[in-house]
Length: 230
Image 1: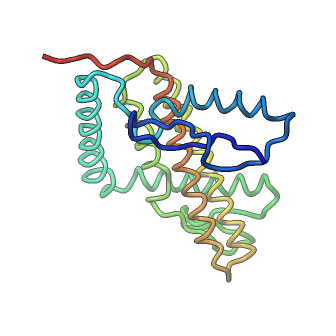
Image 2 (image 1 turned 90 degrees about the vertical axis):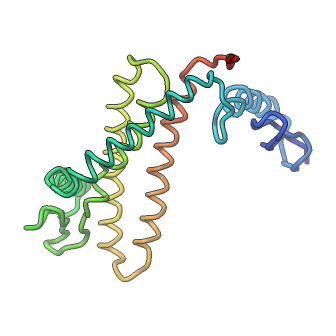
Image 3 (image 1 turned 90 degrees about the horizontal axis):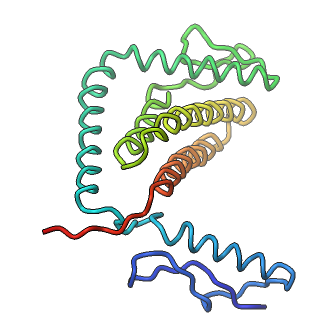
């Protein structure tokens, strides 16, 4: 048994650091060097930067710009979508029907007899209805949440031009996979409580991916020391 470092929160600098005496872990001699190198890389690259409660590394004016843009994008979402597009319903219907149809295609590729019913939001298995996809689960809110942060947080416009489409495409595929897994679960274990269990896990996975993309975007930006005002 050998003492090794684990993550610890230090209030002094509001960043993650390593403590060498918090836990005992069995480390073989052959893997000790690799573990120490990995520990050093993580401590310098990730946990010394803005991961969870980030310490501001930009000047106050930049953070004000971020907050103003975030509020502005939220208002755009509220008035543009919740007050107009959502009541209209056509955009949600289009996205939801596409999600149901694409899920059925994915399941057919995997060897299942999946189709879409007369209701374009209903996925059938063996001509029996199994999963109805509601408008809140068509992925639009996920795309907006991801893109809004990337647009508001300072960074390279050139990187945004490929990161936002790539991120939306990845979230679309992940949401598609989520629907497919839920259909298969409902097909084989419809009397169990596993549907809500898997739904919760898959939802956490989707939002975890969004957070990871945000973190990637933050870590791509040059770290500049804050400037004094006045």
